[in-house]
Length: 469
Image 1 (cartoon, rainbow, N blue to C red):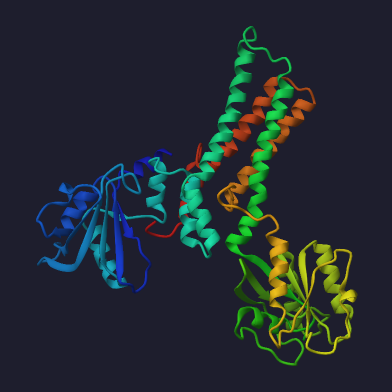
Image 2 (cartoon, helix red, strand yellow):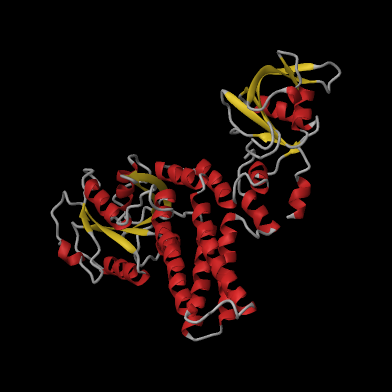
């Protein structure tokens, strides 16, 4: 990462708060010349230079634009000082706390940039924190997850990872794997002092332990992703089954148009709602039937595609009319796609001509009686969804929850490498074959925390961060 180290010679600046009208705005400056840049734009009440201030102190003063014919006062501000290495980036850092507002923040940033700083790239402050050893890559990604968190679980889990929970677990695994690699290498180089008799069986046991630890993290990832990002939920049913009414009931307002005319919904309508501890990312789709109308037919195909990608299908059945081929086709589709599903037995306020027994299938999907019109049945749906998705309740104090897709991918790759070690042992391969896949597992685990990370991967990761972070 030589190029990144060279870029660190620059002093960077950016607006660190949201680009909106607000009471306070923050312009962050970081780098070797941060204090010098601040000295050119800041005039403190006590008359001292910023470069003379102690670390972790706050100072009242004014931002002055001296680049004009006549020096002009821009704003009265509070200036925070953080000296290396005790700052977010590990570099000398200054934060200008000004009055909020798009124009004013941009005006002050412009003055800073004209006095020796350059505009920071997205995520560059956090990238410097990573390069300077202030945090590993899993912690850096936790920063972005914390900013993007939408619920209590996501925020708490991000804070847990920011404190180093993932790093500690990965380092423990890597150290154990490295010990085995070193032992094998030493035994092969010096067979007189290291005995490998019975070692393959011993290594097999340890490798299974490594795999179990990775499996535990991978098992937690699905529940973690669902609790963090929400459940991708498709609402399916034939026309006029009450899908749009169900969407309106769950969202608490009239998101979709509800009429007695079949085929009203032609395109997907999206809404996010909370049911208990779960967030449902709902998509109301076109009613599934054999449609002659070209536009409706496109909507039906789109509904099938959305359902194929969903975590959950809410199959809405009109209990007041007999089941038909459209209902049976939807049920067959759900079974073919092997989807988690809940059957909503709608219009329970009317006389039922469909029994719950008629809806039973080989998969025995839960059947919840509801009335979208009267707003009943939600408590039964909440209990069912909790049983389906949170059957393995995660305790943040006891278990690491991996929700980052990149980290999950590396864990799976490490597990595959360990699987090849076990296969080599079972096949009676020589010991030097074990080190190849042990090293591969060690490397994939290292990618999680940023070891051996290439420049292009690092650039891609940090480019997804927001500006000023």
